[in-house]
Image (cartoon, rainbow, N blue to C red; front, side):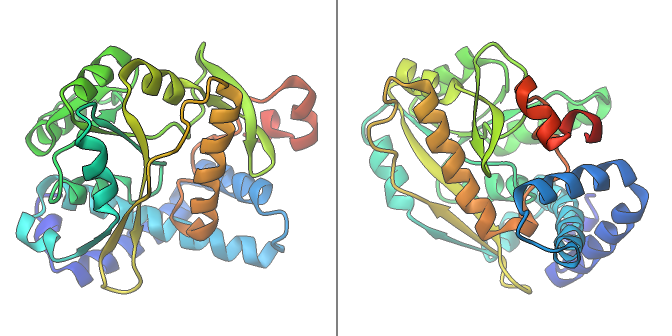
Length: 286
């Protein structure tokens, strides 16, 4: 990965595409999950259109793995030339209030490279999950601590709030199937989806503004675009269901804009209301 991080960017994209093609054939279980998710979220597409989207998604996944190497070991000067940013003033205005900012994002295949690229404009803290492989987890922990101001375990809400109190922006993505106490079923692509309400709770505890942050892999070798949107107004509203529905809609709009770059291989619809499981056949299929 260290060597790959130093290859020319066009070569990295080619390697990523080849890796994605290999993953498409060697990861049948993940391919099955992605196919189900795409079918549920885009019922208007015919079978051939879904198949093309699935193949594009695995190509994006392969490039995302190469981007992991670029994120951790890529030379800063080279990476800096690949990025353009929109809306940095929204983040700067939030930080002037001294309460940090919650960078609300989502699990796209570009999430790792996006978190590295924004550090060229603003130091941030990130959330992370433990890896089953302890060696890989230790390497990743050291690298993240070198790149970011802080790396906080995804279940450590106190640690997250502590970063915000230090006036740090924290990268945060609530769009995975967390089976936790703070969870409600709200629409995501018109499907009742288990979604954590922690975003509202963190905003209330810290007083930090919630600022949508998304990254996009541009066509060809143009690099990446970081998009920072205005802070969410009247958030939290005091209604967890309304707040979580609003967040899901925001993420859904971004996924519809870049469907091939979303992390479809995750079991997003694993947990559903009992009354809905038979309709979507998620329990058996996922």
